[in-house]
Image (cartoon, rainbow, N blue to C red):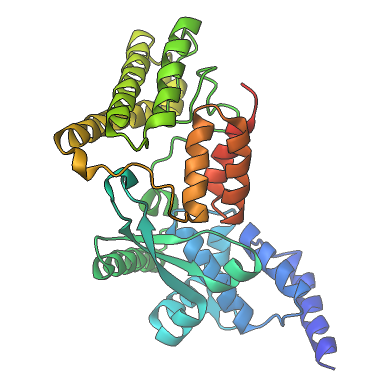
Length: 344
C-alpha cells in the first residue's frame, strides 16, 4: 500500500514536470529520490533546498534557478525554504555537515606541520547519495574565525535571496582562469605541472630547465642538507630561465594571458619561496631533517610524493598518484595526475 502511494505521488510529479522549468540539480535529486523509493514530499523539498544553497553559496549558478527560487512547493518557495533551514538550528544540522579542514605542511623537510585552513560545509543528502563533493569554505586562523567567516557568507547569501538578487557568481564566486582541459598546457610542449613554457621555447631551453627541475625533485628531500641546498639552487635556475622566456615571449593576446598568467604567478611565488628555503637551510642546517624513511606515510603523503615525481616526468608515478587521489576523492589532484600520465 505504501509503495502504491509513493508511485502515485511520483506519477503526479511527472505530469507536472512537463510544464515546470527545473534546474539540473533538482532533476538529478528527484531522479535519485525516485530510484530510492522516497516520497515526493516536504522532506524532499528541504533536501533540494539545502543542495541548492551549497551550490549558490559557492558562487555557482544553474539554468532555471530563478524559477526554482520563486516556485512554491508544499507552502514555501525555494527562497523561503532555504532561509527557513538556515534559521532553524534543528533543520540546519539535519541537512548540513560542517568539518574542519587543514592546509598541508608548508615544508615537511623542516618539521612543519599542517595548519588549520578553515571549515567546510556540505549538504548531507547529496554528498551521501550523489557523491556531490561541493563544499562551502569558511576561512580563518582558528575555529571561531572560520565559523564566523562561513556564517557571514551565509548571511550575505540570505540577504541576496530576500532582495531577489540571484547573481551568485558575481557576488559569491571567485575569479577563475577558465582554462579548458585541451588548452591547459598548450603553450608549452614541456611542462612539469609547475613550470609551463611558451610555444617558442627552444629544445635547448627545455633541456636546461628539465635537467635542473628533475635534479631538484630527486634531491629536494635528501638526508644531506648540502644536496638539498644544491637542489634548491638548481630549482631556482630552472624557474629563472622559465620566467625569462615569458618576458622574452610575452602573451600574444588576452586569451593566452587568461590561460597562462596564473602559471607565471605560481612560478614567481615558487621562486620567492625557494629563496626563503635556501636561506633557512644554509643559516640553520640543524632545522633541516630531510626525508624520514622509517616513518609510515599516509595515503595523502604517498600521493603527494608520487605527484612530485610525476611532475618530474615519471609516468608510472603519475599512474599510481592518480589511483590514490581517486581513492581519496581528490578530483583536482587526480586530474593533474591523469594529465601527467599522457605522453608529451
